[in-house]
Length: 151
Image (cartoon, rainbow, N blue to C red; front, side):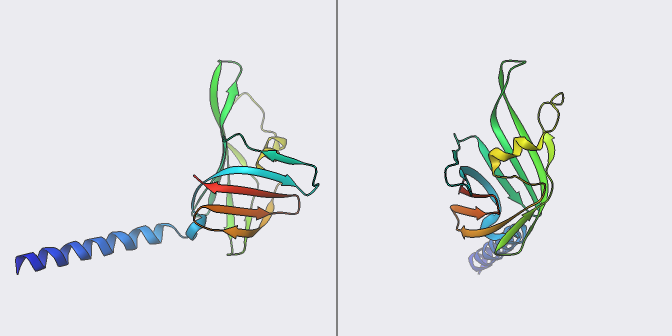
C-alpha cells in the first residue's frame, strides 16, 4: 500500500511540474533562443549569412536580440550588444515594436542602422511566419526574409 501511495505521489508531482512548465511557454515553439542563419533582403542580390553570433530570444511578450561576438576595440576583447522590445504573436505573425539598447557600450550612441544585420529595417516590424517548428523559424517582412534555427 505504501508503494502505491509513493507512486501516486510521484505521478501527481510530475503532472504538477509538467503543467507549470507548459504555462510558462505561452508562445509554443516560438519561445526560446534562436540563432540567426540568413537575412535575405527583398532585393534578391542581397543575402547576409550570419557567422553564428546573432541571436533572437523570445520569452512571454519580450524579444531580446543580441550580437554575442561584438569586438570592443577599446578594451581588446569581445563584448555582447543586446536590444530588447515587446512583441505581439498572433499565431501566423509577429509584430515587434521599437528596440531599445539593453546592454552594450554605454559610450556608443544607439543607432537603428545597427539592427539591419538582424533583418530589422523599420522601427516597428511585422513578420509573417512562413515556418515554425521546434528547430526552425522562417519569418518574412516587407523588407526581408530571415531564417533562424533553435539554439
